[in-house]
Amino acid sequence: AEYLDNSKTEREAVDTTIKMLKERGYAEYSLGDKVVPGGKYYLNNRGKEIFAFRMGSESLNEGMRISAAHIDSPRLDLKQHPLFEDGGVGYLKTHYYGGIRKYQWPTVQLALHGVVTKRGGETVEINIGEDAGDPVFVITDLLPHLSGDQNKKPLATAFSGEGLNLLVGSTPFYEDDGTVTKVDEKVKLNIMAMLNEKYGIVESDFVCAELCAVPAGK
Image 1 (cartoon, rainbow, N blue to C red):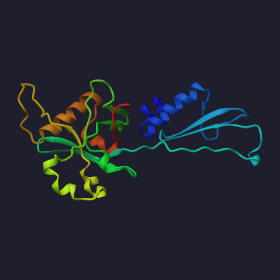
Image 2 (image 1 turned 180 degrees about the horizontal axis):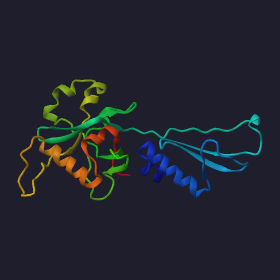
Image 3 (image 1 turned 180 degrees about the vertical axis):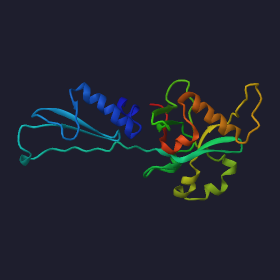
Image 4 (image 1 turned 90 degrees about the horizontal axis):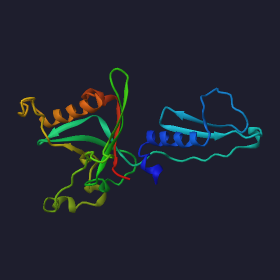
């Protein structure tokens, strides 16, 4: 359970696995490094894939044992230009990954995980929704008295991928004098102001980001 708590994305799974391997005496390996019989090594493939291997004493002609497992997970990836405002509410556009069941994602508490590479080349890790006091995010659903058409649709089509937008804020940006700003998209501006204050990112940095929504909590 602890492994799953800390490994909701491929990058997190790689980091968690490396920590476990180091505790068990595995050394980092790069292609071309010399290996010795009995040695324990791991290869980190750009933070998205991890190999761990132990060298035997016999020739490879005698065979080898391989175990393989996926470290990807159900998630909603953010699009490259995700942030928009509609009706005084801020949203992030998502693209569902793999074969998720779309009807399972609305009204569930979600966290935002991933990395952003800023213009200067610095990579910033993002994790919002896991710590006590963090906001959590949600994909809204229709109220029962508004969902008549939705209720008539088959389960597979009642929830569309284009409708899986992440609700992220509704508070407008306030100027230093305490008044609401007069610029358009006040909520979107406030969301970016908070992200800039905490992580130093600007809206154009989303293009070089790898962010996803995952279920919040353990």
